[in-house]
Image 1: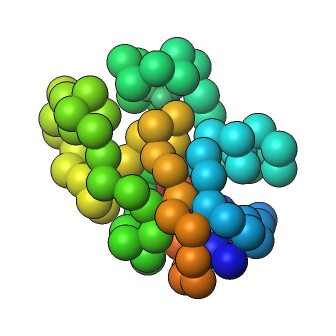
Image 2: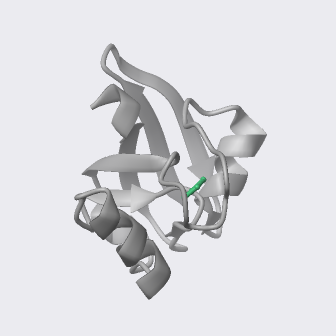
Length: 102
Ligand code: FES
């Protein structure tokens, strides 16, 4: 079971246990996580997050996600798009925060 910790500049604000892995965007929606979204289709960059720990807990980014990150001058795996990121099934810790909070 993955453990996802959402942080702000003030520290951790939300911890979610995710059995079986899945869409990070769905987790954000279900738990009202502090990550902003707009297009949800890898084009605007609004949902960009910094991965503070546990980059390996996410599946590798697809080309369209990498293109947006390049346009934002952000590099995977330190930075990802929440609307595209998929959390792997399995044990591990993922700590993230919105780039608005970086
Ligand atoms: S919400 Fe626009 S790139 Fe993710």
